[in-house]
Each structure stands twice: as C-alpha cells, then as structure tokens.
Length: 149
Ligand code: TYD
Image (cartoon, rainbow, N blue to C red; front, top):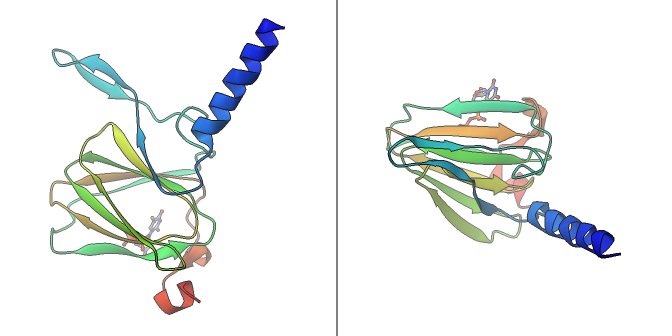
C-alpha cells in the first residue's frame, strides 16, 4: 500500500516535472565542483520532454545580427547557451511577448511548438539546440502575418 502510494506520488512528480506546456527555463543538474569543472546532462525523461531527433548548434553570430524570425508548426526545442549570452524574444499567436536570457551552460530554454522567436547573440555565443524532429522546411512559418492569423 505504502509502496504503491509512493509510486503514484513519484509518477505524479515525474509528470509534473515533464509537463511543459509553455516556454520554460530548465535548470540542468550540474555535476562537479570548481576544482574539477562540471558536467551537465540533458537526458530524455529527466529534462527533455520529447524524443531527441536532431541536435544543431550556431556560432560566430555577429552581435548586431538577429536570427530566428520564424515559428514552428510542430517542432519542440531546448536551446542552451553553452557559452556566451543569448537573448530569445518569443511571441505566441496572440502576440503575448516573453524575453529569456541564457548566459550559463547549465540552463536551457524549452520552446513548445507555435512560438515566434527572434534571437540575438554575443559574438562568443554557442547555441546548442536539441530538437524533437529532423529538419523540415515545411514545419517553418516564416511569415509573421501568417503566424498571427
Ligand atoms: P534557420 O532555422 O532559418 O536558422 P535561424 O533561425 O538560426 O536563422 O536555418 C538557417 C539555414 O540553415 C536554412 O537554410 C536551413 C538550414 N538548416 C538546415 O539545413 N538544417 C537544420 O537543422 C537547421 C536548423 C537549419
């Protein structure tokens, strides 16, 4: 009885932790200590609420350039600034805005499907993206007026 209660409780905790419906900063575990350095891990079912189908990274983006300028129909992503500083400006289809800043390698931003994003970078920034689907241009909405329709 106690064991099944504990199992139920742990399951609910697990569901709660992985129940990402809105954009959300994820604090990854940080294994290590200053004298040794650190490891952070993005593992499916602990921090990543989808099966990982693709990982890509961007780098050497000049600091006056904004990337993004699109939304995705189905794609879910976690963005991590493994170095440098990255600002992500999000909008939903009702044009509600949210701004997130990533500036440490043990944090990531979960972006559900259906959010318009514009992204700016410090020149030393390396953005790693963990994605739920392989690259598919048909999944992109690149026209803002089409996005807010
Ligand atoms: P895009 O997703 O528009 O980049 P950003 O939002 O950072 O400006 O992609 C830029 C180009 O790279 C575009 O021509 C498609 C190509 N690309 C791939 O071929 N595979 C990928 O996984 C990604 C993310 C982009």
